[in-house]
Length: 621
Image 1 (cartoon, rainbow, N blue to C red):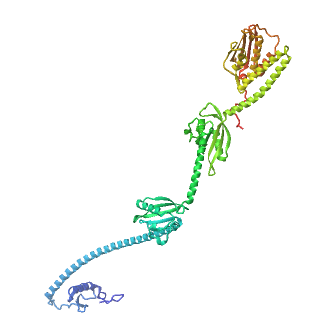
Image 2 (image 1 turned 60 degrees about the vertical axis):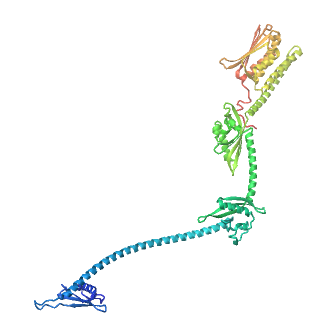
Image 3 (image 1 turned 180 degrees about the horizontal axis):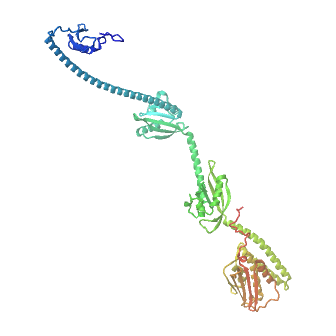
């Protein structure tokens, strides 16, 4: 025995030498397996401090303790000394040893089995623990979700309650048997509801509206599942309401009743009736405007900000040479390419300023008559909506004929003023000449009257033609055929027209020639005739108008000794007024006379200016 260092222990294993511990452990195990009988074993090869051999013994006592003995085996005295062992005891020990071995094997096997079972149980316990942990986590998650759902449900209920209070809409909830389930506070203004009415049939509760009609509609909605709407008037006739019914559905019970809301539309209905009346009146006005628009004798249209036509009547379509149903949607550059620059500039100004642009003058050809130059006067005006110009309307008036008339009037007035002066000058000259002529005063007076009458006849021709131009045949016919007959006058030449100055001058020349022929020439005899021919000649020095006068069948002609007033008058008219020339030839068979005039001086219309009045006309006053 030996006390170990450190904490003192009274156990046999703590007191025995380490070298003896394995043997003692085997001995105690054998005692336990041998039912407490005494056992002994020898231990050799000990340290130098101990005997060469040591006998260890052990026995289980009746009180449950175990007795351990230590003994040194006796040293033999001589070679004959022997150890005698009891064979019965040895056999008993061997049997006990075999039993101990079997028990140990069995115990080991049971221990291994128990270990396996314990391992399996441990694994199952660990798996169950993991499952329990997972289930616990799922339960925690589910609990959190339920708490969230409950919170959301509480918020939804609160939102629904606040919504029902804030909407201020009379809403009633009924179950499938049309019993009152719930209602908003506003519903109490239409129904005689109290809190105790929940669960009562809706038909048993008083109301300001027809409850029987609402109940019938509720039954239809509950059976068919389709919403419905009723227009009703309160019993006292002071209010009009709309009742909107819809099926009450829930996920648990499906179609579970009916809900309906009442809307006071008294004011809205009054406004709607007023709006309907105003709309009808506006439509009537629009129809009148449309009728006026379509039947207007002037061209009218409307363009948007893209310069596209959004409205156009038939007159405008005629100007563009496009059918009225095709012109809508086209741009102005497509309809009037020649005029689009001026037109778009005016429209842009209206859009930018919001002010009308009046009396824009446009000149050019139309789509229907591209070769005919026309003049239009256009008024542009803005069409406002919400304070902004949304479109530009315009009215187009063709003023071509009016400008022509104005130009004619100005020309006639100027020509009249000029011709009156000339006529008065001619009359004064004729009168002065008549005063100096010798002979019978009555003859002189008749000659003067004839000359003035010829001048007046020429003026009548010009007046009939607006003082623009007259036909040469009309001038000759007036002075010759109408007086002496067509059988004595031959006219040959192309159709041509003389301007006002040439008409007056040639009229006086022909009158003087006819007067001389009636006195001294062909018209003085019954068989005498006069031939007049005219033509347009270009001799390289400019175009000329040439008129030839030839007399035949009259008395023999001799040149006059002196120039008379008629000759000077003709020279003044042709050479002074028109820049022409008169060449008389006094042939014995009759007078031959040639009148030559510059072509432009004879035919060009003498306007009041050098500009074409249709291309340069000012806006009309």
